[in-house]
Length: 83
Image (cartoon, rainbow, N blue to C red; front, side, top):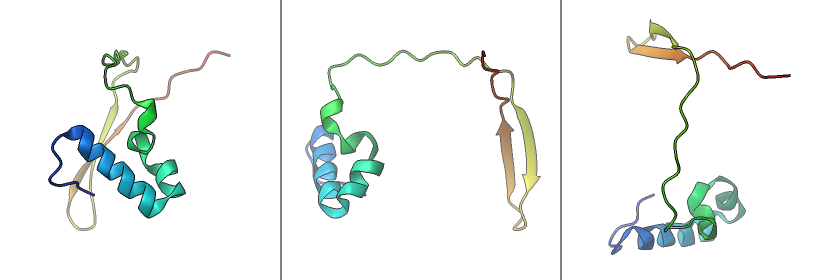
């Protein structure tokens, strides 16, 4: 969905939230992501600090589909959990 003629990003998010709540009700609350619960978003909060990934290099697998499209699959090994 796309909101047009909104003056700013906040107005776009509000319009999308209002429509989604009206149109899909409880489904929108479950699957609407952050915009489904705008009261939990603090627009003045500083950006979250990204933590570094602690994984080994991925295995890369190249393959071709039946319709001749080349695809690449990257597989990361799961981290070992402490017991």
